[in-house]
Image (cartoon, rainbow, N blue to C red; front, side, top):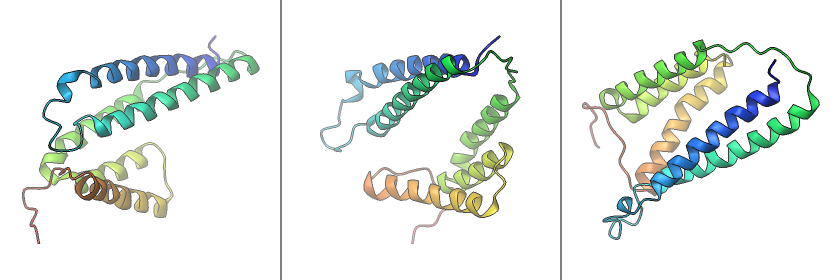
Length: 157
């Protein structure tokens, strides 16, 4: 039988290994070529995300080890339906970004993803789905000076 803490620990170890592999790849010198003029490396933002991912994975491992000591063994049902749904939604999102542009595709993705995975409170759902992609677009466009995909019918004013 698998304890819940064991499940969390196993997932955390896997997540730590993946984040360390991504960190190793992102630190390779050929990503730094031609960066002197633009100011930011192409891996600047991904590195931030990888470090956050690594930190959260370490916290999950710590929590899993603590829970492991406190819990009785229980049988845990493992289902692949939710991960498959999530993967399918992300694939559709990736397909829609060049067609609809970053903002509209992100709004649709957020609404569908949160609804499929059980978030039903309408006002926070709408606020998160419309404001968060707008905030990301603003950060990338104006603070990081990186352009995100726009729809083919986007008109600049």
